[in-house]
Length: 277
Image 1 (cartoon, rainbow, N blue to C red):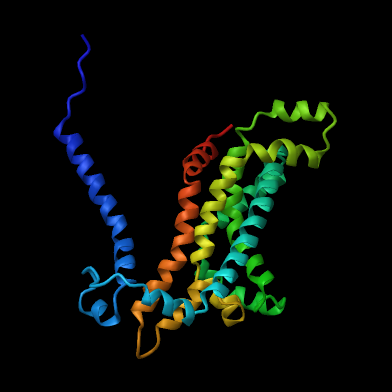
Image 2 (cartoon, rainbow, N blue to C red):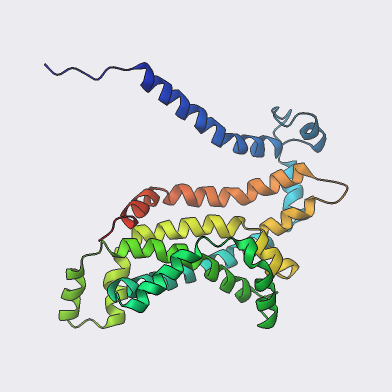
């Protein structure tokens, strides 16, 4: 007779460890949410305690203070344009690199991979000079171009690995049926890239939506995003933690909903993208 696996102390210890790690990752959300309902004095006295009341006064004041609908739309426009351009450019680039494995294309892919290890801080000064030279600062298209430049390497790397798993026979059959090169890509190849496309979208949305350093360098007050607006609550002599927590909660909710809606595609896309053909 088959014996059932025994519930060992080692397995119990691993489960407890995973449970504690889960709590540790959830702690920032706990502090963010409970402090968004508390007054400033209560936050300074004990940031870990539950609020005395669960009113929405902080959210109303924060909504008006930073003009939340406007800055939300700014962040939405920048994120949508940047991510959309990244998906199109990276997928087409990776497809060309995979299907045309010339020496130049192999070298180009190596450059893309090598660019992933360059820290952003090392290119801040050249970036400021280039954006000023080409009049990119203070404009939406300027920061979108910057996000494409900084995000293209990882996106190409993920698409490159996934496209290797796409059967070449499907493309050959489409060519026999008279499909043009662009029709082949958009009608046959691109729909097959849905899992990795969703992965690239989620990773870049999380990065661009919460980014502070690049907007403050490129657009600053000309096109204020949510992270730049929240910074107004932190002055030299006063820090309005109550309004800041409420603003951060409002800005985090759309991303959490978006992430939960598409999270099932993340592991599928990354796993498939790591398979070498």
